[in-house]
Length: 186
Image (cartoon, rainbow, N blue to C red; front, side, top):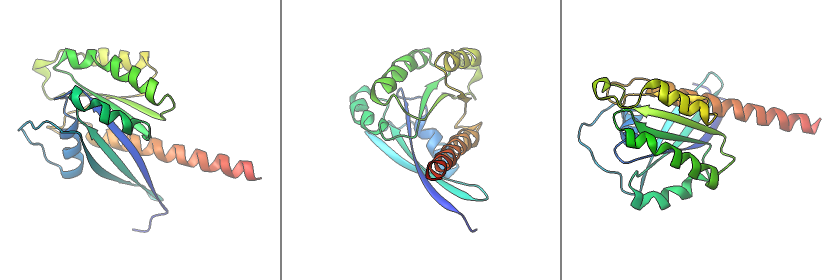
């Protein structure tokens, strides 16, 4: 495959402990779902490649620990992010209620982040749902977040769509930037 340009886009996943951030990463990178829960210590880095006919985007995805103990370390990586994905668990109302705190923290640390995504994970657990789709969508609308997804790392629902949307947004942003630079030179 002959690609035009290779872009690297830093993406940060944040959210409470046990919301499934690491499971989302493992699903998109390795097509696996591990039923054993292992708490992330500090952070992990994953790479997701997205190809178009013309370009390739390598998403450098920072999977930050949801544990409060490691949150100060995770904050450092927010500043350098193109996109930040805030993940909550649809079967855990408390994780949803903490989304406000994460979004306020993002505003303080990096008010000019290009893309914020709200992601309700574990949609395969419909019987245990504590947060409706409409509540998630309304919160995204309230904060002006155009990208809202409900995903399931277990059954791979909307995982590819989530990363495709982020990649397309990044490419569009790059193309607009390059076009603006070209206009300034003429």
